[in-house]
Amino acid sequence: MMQRYREVKAETPGTILLFRMGDFYELFYEDAETAAKVLGLTLTSRDKGSANPVPMAGFPYHALEGYLKKLIHAGHRAAICDQVEDPKTAKGMVRREVTRIVTPGTLTDETLLDPKESNFVAALCPTKDAVGLAWLELSTGRFQCAEFSGRRADSSPQSSDSRTQTRRQLGVDPVSMTLDELARLHPAECLIPENARSESVCARLAELDGTIVTERAPWCFSPNQSREVLLRHFETRTLEGFDLGDEDSAGITAAGALLEYVQETQRSSLGHIFKLEPYRRGAAMLIDEATRRSLELTRTQRDGKRDGSLLG
Image (tube, rainbow, N blue to C red; front, side, top):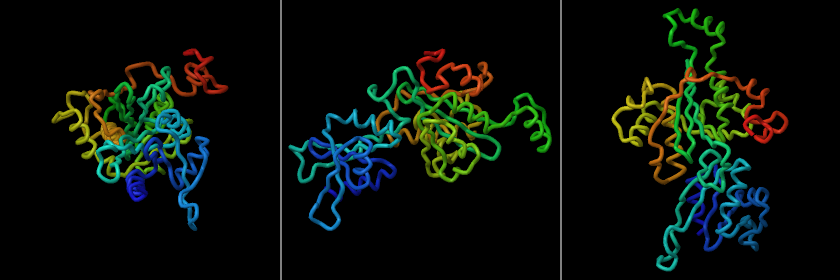
């Protein structure tokens, strides 16, 4: 049993593993110590008589959603390993597999979501000249992407130095635009390439209160890989029908990386995600984060709550 536990744990790094054993979900080692603090569980141990007893904690399986909610709200990711065959008919040890990985940005259960708040998971793809951003509300299937750069659609060709100077004069900064959109979306989780932590836009994600940053392997943000993920999911040969523009754009790359992450964590059908929408900043009046905050449009300045804001 413990050998299987260690195998599953190795397959789900960065998560707290909830391992189903009979009528309980059990946690071991560092996961048990973390859960004891976050969930208020009693910390016990296996092999108490040995020189190195194994820390252990657990709770009844029917209390899963309540404990899961506490773990997620504390900023943790949880892997749920269930019994996937009937114990009465199983030969030998009951087979166990991870049935889902729950993260702050991939919640779908009504008991874990606030019905008055959107819960987005986002992905950032910074490049030399632009920043790709994609976001998804998994519970509704709304999926959007955009690319922010210093280029203007109506600008005439200029030299590199001239363009840079013009961007500064106009205040057109891809990083600032991206951060402003992230502040508007307020995603619960944001994916970034693990080799881009020092990129200016990624380094400033700490400014987003309540957003968990998840690092992914660089190959997840490969343009070809991302495009293939999208084409397979939407069952099309091209993305032209979505009016997304350049299929190698940083925005589409971010969308593919995001969709692959959701497929990996959910391990179930995602048929309700049936389109990818382009987001264009010129389609609506823009209100920057400082103005939204000072006018208390959606949250109060004092405690950051909806109650007391204009929306509330």
